[in-house]
Image 1 (cartoon, helix red, strand yellow):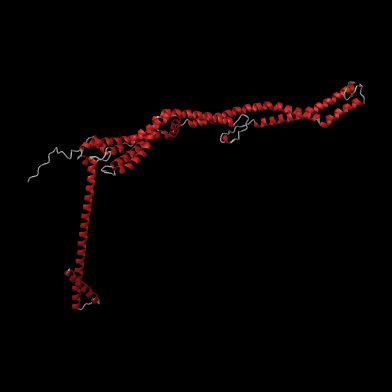
Image 2 (tube, rainbow, N blue to C red):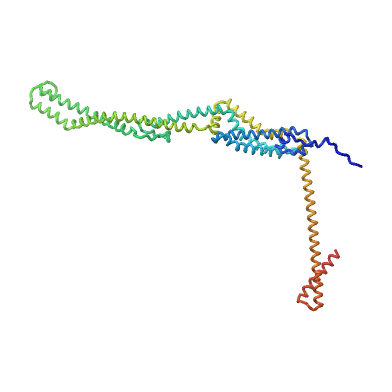
Length: 443
């Protein structure tokens, strides 16, 4: 009976698809020769490939955003690294999807679960930089405000720990905030304070002694003038009592060292009068230098802050805003979850679609491949076994031929009388040969 020709427009397998959808399906490892048997699912797997490709593009953009906040370099320098990261994520997603083709039955969820967890971990690396990018303006403003507050607090701390007196604040809170400024007025101010204290102490000692000396002088003057009163006779003239009173006043002044103390007090007053303008001038000069040093330190910190706002700064600002505002907190996490869902969409889409006809075909093809491989392996094993048995048989035959030839040549030599003393050995070998031939004949 003649065979019928297969029509050109056969129903299955469908003609191969050479359009752009083929390249998108290649992004998820679709075997086109199998897909030709279920062409109705081409659109679904084309969309799945587009999702995987979009995830790789998102990963590249997220990496470009993160690198731009970490490294100060032009975009064209960072772009190759971002594209490489996007390719890595694309490759992982492609493996996550292609490794589930043909998975069916109750173990489907167990197969997808570790892949979904891996997709979530990858999604976090993509979602967080994109979240910072979306909130960038607000976060940059928050970082700038925080840096201004930090500068104000830093300047206030420097002023507190470095007073214009030149005497540092030695408390633990001022560790690391001390400034070394030349010509501190502390020594002069300390000398001035010491002189004033000595002046006060000396004045306290002189005041009663001068009062007592003045009292004795008044009594002597009254006695000599003839004034009547306590401790005075009322007799005028330079009499014995007048002389005795003056002698008592001089003796008291000598005993108390009143003149030396008064001279010392005058010297202290002169010293204080000279130190006051010096201390004022030193404090003014030191205050100006201290102010310059503080401004210089603040400028250095401002210059350090003036560097590009990094990803750590933005993360800190986002955490701060989230702790201050529940709206920002929920908005941030809602955005993160949405981005994670988008990044996990390839695996989720494959899981939610269920087992497709293509999966069934792939599963059957895998089973067929296993059977073909098992059959081929048995065939190769049997073929190799037969080959080895033939080699063994040929080796035995060759051995027997050599033994026969040896036995014939030995007989000829014996007949000619040319024995070499190995007749017994050759006879034994010939006997073994005959026994082997007899054994094989019986078999």
